[in-house]
Image (cartoon, rainbow over all chains, first blue to last red; front, side, top):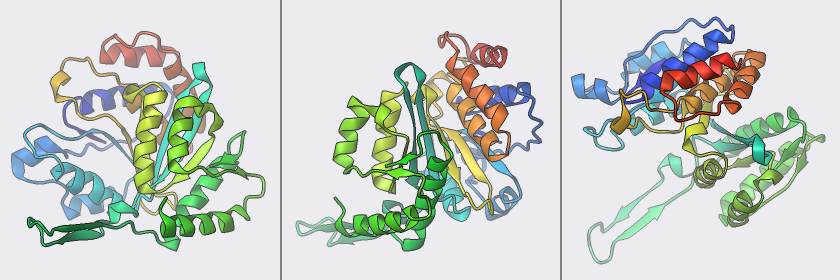
Length: 162
Length: 152
């Protein structure tokens, strides 16, 4: 469990309460990570903590970020570092609004494309400045996320993949 | 249109599709998908897309299906070599922290996704049903959690 900052610990507490009430026995370990931890001792996500996280079945995170820490420090140092180190290559987003018959998933590639950070500046700050921004797409990266999406579609009644 | 990247995606998609004959497939340009998301999101079942287009489409998807209070997400390693990470899409909202004003539904739905991965699909489905039955979202954070528990 990474409750994190602000309302993060409050909403994670409710999530755990519901999971346990649903009859699932969960063994949890709390990790103190996020903006508050960073402000206290300058730590975002040490390699030892990352190695420790590898031993768990799943990670539940509330929210991270505090106004006192510059935007990007925690996002890059914690969320993105975890995503790349643990190779979490699928970002799965369910969308459901039964009242309007909306029920679909977006399977978003989570480690490549513009996330790979290809690009840079030439003559930065001058009138002749050039900025390039690449999108890295590998056969392995595309195939594994596409395969996941097909498997998800196959498990659903409509079995349709866009 | 990303000419080269799109070409690699399409060729790879077509190759993988051959392994899933029971799945029907379709293709949208991202600009057309934005229109369909607003006008007729019911047409979609599963969408697969790249990182950048996915960033935009998932924000739009949240906006047309109940808003950020319901938006859950999973960052998955389907190979199960490393743990997957589940989180509500919303931020830490420091302006309302400690006041029990936050809507915990997105976090609860994220935990339900986690249960799917942990092989507890029945519990996950009961939690999702209970979440969609919660009527009073102006209640306090623990009260909304209690309402979900009551609906299990």
